[in-house]
Image (cartoon, rainbow, N blue to C red; front, side, top):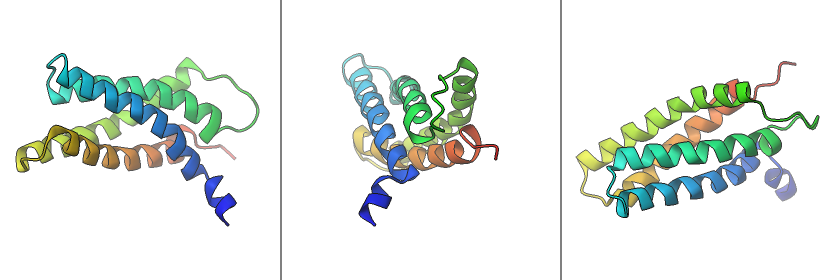
Length: 133
């Protein structure tokens, strides 16, 4: 049972997304803390960095068909267009938390990441990497 859960598409998505999320989160924090960029700008740039890493990982690991097909520019553009919805969700949650509460940026960003993660998973599953069988 645990082997089945550990090998599930959702868990692979979680693992691949974790790598992109670390790059995304650290980039956003560094841009906000060290360069003084606004939370929205820093979060958006971090999101784009994580997006490239996530697309490659999801193409080759999470949603791989096993045929060894290379990642394509067209596939990346489709992925980029699709995850813009998750960026919008993330920014709405981030701005909402910042305006409605006095929580530190890193807490608001963490909550926004959760909402964005779920949105991204379902977009990837049902549209970007959907198998036409």
